[in-house]
Length: 245
Ligand SMILES: Cc1cc2nc3c(=O)[nH]c(=O)nc-3n(C[C@H](O)[C@H](O)[C@H](O)COP(=O)(O)O)c2cc1C
Image (cartoon, rainbow, N blue to C red; front, side, top):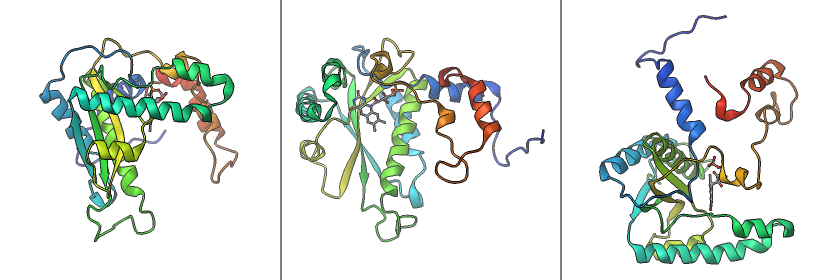
């Protein structure tokens, strides 16, 4: 085995620090049903937003903004948008799954302590499109990285986050006065929760299963066979939730 080279410029993570990072990832949940009525301290929310703000971004563009939504009436209006969008989505779902779809709880807009809309300003640093000349959508991906940072930090703080995408974007933009050149990326329900479920809600309700990771790994080209040793190592880890570094 090769000796590990220490990284310059940083305290290395010890085992417990590594465990904590993986734990946040493996126990993070999309939360819709277990919000409690406690408020969320601004000090905690500030830390979560700071984590989001340290996400990577193309050309260091930092295209995000964070709209904090607390007002009950505005949230009811967002929930109405969700209910309308769900009805529109329903016919696209396979006929035999529609009854289950209707039963799923897919948002916690009014029950959570607050809502957060994370947006991407597509014109920020528009005159210097470093990394976006060929791939202009990279600003959207950068904003998704901010969402994930927020979500993982929230898990570590014991705060639940649920992403609601079943909303018509233009209607949401009107409701939140989001300008034309800004794209809402994530509408999140955020708050203290009574529990983090051990597995995804959609798995618990029989909607889907985690795909076997080793079947998703390819070698050299798309669908390229190979990487047998890596795939064995993955299989030895067992289910993702229990995998330890
Ligand atoms: C881009 C994105 C959009 C999502 N939209 C919704 C949604 O509208 N409603 C919902 O209940 N969950 C939504 N989810 C959560 C997924 O259903 C959830 O991540 C998945 O079932 C796995 O569960 P877990 O996040 O608890 O691991 C969304 C997740 C992502 C990443």
